[in-house]
Image (cartoon, rainbow, N blue to C red; front, side, top):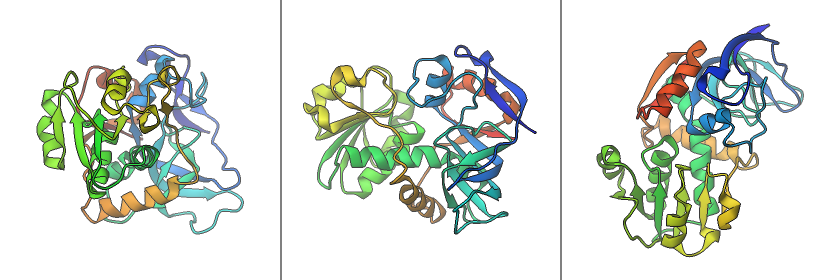
Length: 291
């Protein structure tokens, strides 16, 4: 047996409860981690509340898309990693809010990368790489990014600028200096902007603005707005085929100092409900759960 924060129902943070659960077993192509740190993100909140049900989470399950830890078991067919290796992982079937978790996609954690940074990277980095590919962003083009001060937005900004793009970042006042330091141009939501592509990393009803800015729904992507189909745009989800390369690339950038992550703070794993409350209250840091 093991312990985890279980989603007992959809609703307020109180539905997240510390419980004893069966120790998960890795299937073909999977590994099991002894979790050292797990990331908490806005999508977790949307799933917990019942607002977003696109990722298969259900009462009785465990939230968490990203974790870092030590491998303690490998499933059939797994090569290149063994028990005792330290990795950062993306959890396609969720489960990061736990002492042990099953991972589908992972990369080795370099010794110079902290557990907290390793846990903060996987889901955000994979999403940032993915959405830039989906909107077909190229050098010389302009991207308008909603939620540029968030975990995905910070990484997407740096990757877009590295591609040679101009980034217009729609952020609140307290994030203006941050996005400037990353090389983007802060703009306000009500501003009239024109861009070649748009990424909604906020999920807060900005799709009409994004469409007005770009004019082509094929070049607009949202990460968390379930109304995407109403606007004819893509609700982006993890791509297992491309995720390993995205995670490996961004981990090396992080280890070499070429990638900056959102500032973070830690909470004990059993206080995941409190982490959700703090995010809903507007905390600016990334939250990391520590078993």
